[in-house]
Image (tube, rainbow, N blue to C red; front, side):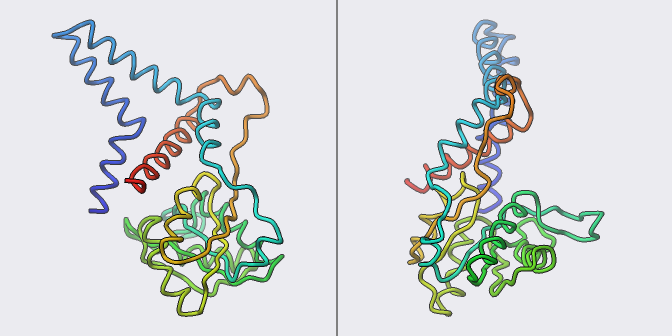
Length: 245
C-alpha cells in the first residue's frame, strides 16, 4: 500500500502529471487536432508557470502558517522531535548513507535548539527504499557534526504519519506529552495534526522558511528548483486534503 501510494502521488503531481497530459494531447491531435493542441499547450503552460520562482515561493509560503519558535514557547516543551527529510544514499565522500539536504537543515536547527535550551532529542525516519535507516544517519550527524546528543531513535517509519505513530510509544514511555516539533516550515502544517492525534501537545519549531530570490527579476525566470518546490508544495496540499477526507 505504501509503494502504491507513492506511485499514485508521483503520477498525480507535476511534472509527471503535466508531461502525461502533454503526451496525451499530442496523441489526440491525430484525431482531434484542436482539442489535442489545447491540452498539450495547457500542460506546457502549467510547467512554465510552476517553474517560476514567484509561483513556487507563493505556494510554499501558503503552507508556512507558524512563526519561528520562541524561548518562552520552548520552555514548555519536554523534548524536541526532528522529522527526517530524506537520505543521501551511498555518499561516496562518506562511504555510506548519510542525511540528505532537507534532513541536514532540520537536524542543524534541532542541534541549535538543544544547545540553547538543553532539551533531549528524538529523531525519526526509516528506510522505505532500503539502505541505512534515516534515524540512524540523523543521530550520527547530530552527534558527530553538531555536537548534540540524541536520546531516542525511531528508525522504522516510512512517512510522516508513521513518524508520529511509531515515535509515540518511545515518548510516552518516558512520560513525554509536550514536544517541540522540528521540520521545514512548509511541512509542519501537515505534520502537527498527526502528532496531535497521538495525544501530544505540539509546539511548532519550523526551519528553512521560503524566501524570494535576491534579485526581483529572478522571480520571473523559470528554474528547475522552482518546479521542484512547486511540486513539493502541491504534494503537501494534497496530503492535507487527504487528511481532511
